[in-house]
Amino acid sequence: MILKRLIYLQNLVPKPKQATLLYSSLSTQSFHYKPNYGENEDPSSGFKAHKFIGALSLGTLFYYLWNNEKQWSIFAKSSPDVGEDILPNAGHRIQHLPTYNSATVAQHSDPNSGRVWVTFKEGVYDITDFISQHPGGEQLLLAAGSSIEPFWHLYAVHKGNKIVYELLEGYRIGNLDPSDVVDEKVSKDDDPFSTDPKRHPVLKPLSAKPFNAEPPLAILADSYLTPNEFFYVRNHLPVPILEEESYELDIDDQGNEGITLSLHDLKNKFPKYTVTAAIQCGGNRRTEMNAKKPLRGLGWKGAAIGNAEWSGARLTDVLAYYGIKNNDEDTLKKYNNFHVQFEGYDVGADGKPFGASIPLSRALDPSKDVLLAYEMNGVALPRDHGYPIRAVVPGTVGVRNVKWLARITIAPEESDTHFQKKDYKSFNPSINWDNVDFDKSRAIQNMPVTSAICRPTKDEIIHLKKGQTSFKARGYAWSGGGAEIIRMDLTVDGCQTWFEGSIIAKDTKAKDARHYSWVIWEADIPVREDQSEIEICGKAVDSNLNVQPESFENIWNLRGMASNAYPRVSVSIKRD
Image (cartoon, rainbow, N blue to C red; front, side, top):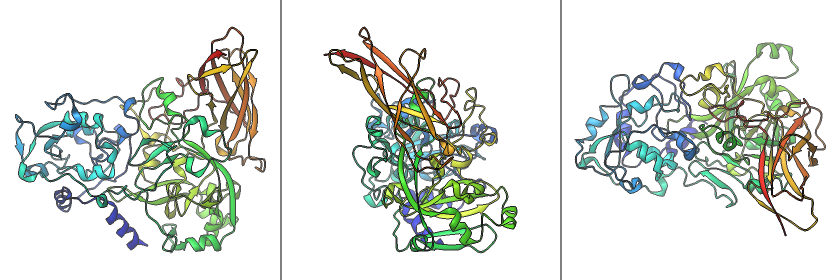
């Protein structure tokens, strides 16, 4: 298992000619800080300004930019002499700047002892002062003292990105010696995304590498079960290539001897269960919150959620097979307040796998329906959705439903990955990137009640026939933790009066507190003769009487998580 993963890691990280200096320089350095990925910086950690020891693979120097480049504030310096057309000029030689060779650049690789330099094409850049502004957490400085280009093959969305290039050129200090400039052409074999699966064109990408996309909101509520091809995709890294015959899942508890299960084992040693559950990204509907105040994150428009039938082995059964039984008092006492750490086969430039965790108590509870799923809507999991095995943790934020499972570890602490410790957390509206402390906020598990108006769409023109006094609206509603959606309220007069929509599709077999699927609702929207414009506003109510908040202002947070205020859609009325 370990050998297979090492081979996979070796094949994943691109190694074009530009990487030679990087790998040789890394071999002489010692790194004493933990790597992780992402978009956030923890200013309270003491790593500030040039003393900051975390942050960049330089694929992730601009990691946060690919999430939604139009929404973010960029604190770049003015680019020196690259001209107004940044794309063809970035990284090209600038005559009046000094020249440095690769050996000199390599000497500037340690933020503890000096400045941090990198190269791009023919340019040399001092990025030291940018590190403290970077929201990527404590990632190894893999590209420090070398070229960023090998890592842009892994985080390829940065290539050809105008905002990224403008930001980089703001830190330009010189030119690279011509003898050290190498051809930037990269073969298909050097691109870790070249083996990603093909996607249906209905998915609208927010980033191409890694691939993140959602379907048009207008079609999302047309089907109770979301077609696999239309299900939103949230990838943080390249999609790994895994085969059924060689797939292995390791399980251990950091103490006793672990076990390894094959896909055949999971399908034949344990009963098959099917659960209908929605999975939603923590940043779904983020664009609506961002419209009130800019934040950082992928610009999901409301379709970063899908509903599917998931089939596989229950995690509680698999853990019982390993020896951790939910009905054994001694076992429960020994593992009290432990966590289940999920680790994926998808890995980053630093060799660290994607990971997240859930409480062990949730995994052991049969009523929580936590699955090691191998089917989605009756067929084998698509590659984008975790083939051959993924965790399905109904009612939780999407990031806990780890795909391409490689390892399950029972441990007294949460996963130490970025996605558990430094992201997917929420804060009060006054917390900003200068005072945020991710250690003081809990990792999101259950998601709050939410809904969306899928049709009509924003600014749509509604054509009414003579005498017609209403038109149809449709959408979805969902609540985390197994709560049932019991009502969808709507208003068209600024929240003065309300009426109820009809729930037209739901999981009729769901048991109490196990309503993990969404509902589809529909409503007749009344129109007066004198109306030419209407704003439709809605709010879902769940079985705990949790209701969506009225506005985004009071739930705003710097990462745009749990964006669940009233959905609002304005339309124009035209009478034929």
